[in-house]
Image 1 (cartoon, one colour):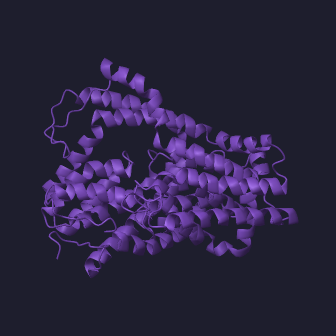
Image 2: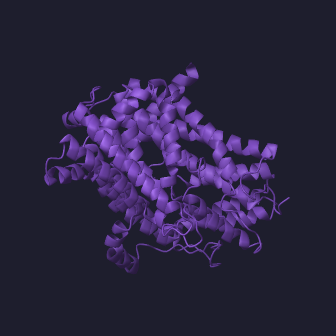
Length: 514
């Protein structure tokens, strides 16, 4: 009991302190000034570290130099426009606006609540979130509003729904039922890194699939336990639902479905199912134009993966339009554009944050600070000369700490793979095992770091139900998931290793392969 009280006090302290911090957009502005000062100081130091990709000595670039400031000035608009989550978020939000404004989503939730018991709501959300990793980051824009709405409708705390879906999506980075777009991206870096030591070595794109699939059961179980036993009880005590009048009107969901709504929902679902059938028919053909040149559907070069965001938009927008027209929600074109505009208004805070975050990422990336931190950390780990089991644990802990400041998995692995993979191959640890340890640690920590690109968006979803929610609220809410996911996924990896179960296709724990 005392331990539970201490943990609650700890989380409460994090929430209080975190919520007293400035707005997250301003935090990134402060971070820009901090990086400027750090690069100024470190630019006078010569480091004995070398970039594993280029072989050149790592030099910190002073981003306060007049020439660098001029470059920043000239690239500010481009940095903002090309900020990865921005365009994707806006496009999907337009589709969500149509589906939600028409009443299609609300009617669907009413029907879903008739077949989903409150007791199994959490695992249902967790399973759907893990499955949704196949649509990559765009799932953040769809699932969390729906999960919170389902919890709210079931008279449970809506923020608990956001937390469960967030943990499922992030945990799904290393625990997934199906291959995801991230698999070929991560495998590509691992393959290139392994070739530095052994050009003939082949890393299968599904080299971690068995581990990933098996981990889903542990991930769902830990999300279920933490949500129902830790996070939601605490939210009930410390974070009462506080809706604005507008939000109350928007979120009001009655238990009854009118005959007109049932008719509209029927035709909207026929539209959605028809679109899915057509898409499936187009994808299943081995010479489909939606496949990559090598025939893959999950490769980042596959048109279906490149067009996943517009596809999601259409899957939401067209059924929403059908529902709105038949139900009478959309009486004119003005109602349609108003519904789309309403969904964008909710993202106003995210739009402001994106500007500052985009500039921070430009400055941080071009300064070489990230490369220096990663390389120096890896060299320190190498100097410890520990047994394989402790070395892998060190990789997990180092990646976890780096993830607090470098949240992009592909960017981080692009730096770390050329260091970790050949280094561990030199002590007989396989590239597949190294990649698995990286992925599980990266997945666990994403949910608790404010540096994560979707944090402001998720906070805006929280504020829809609790106006005082802030950075501290989300951090304190997600820390138990980070701890739980890290323990479960790490334990699963060591269990696989101890029992000798293959991590995936054509994988091994040792180099050379046995």
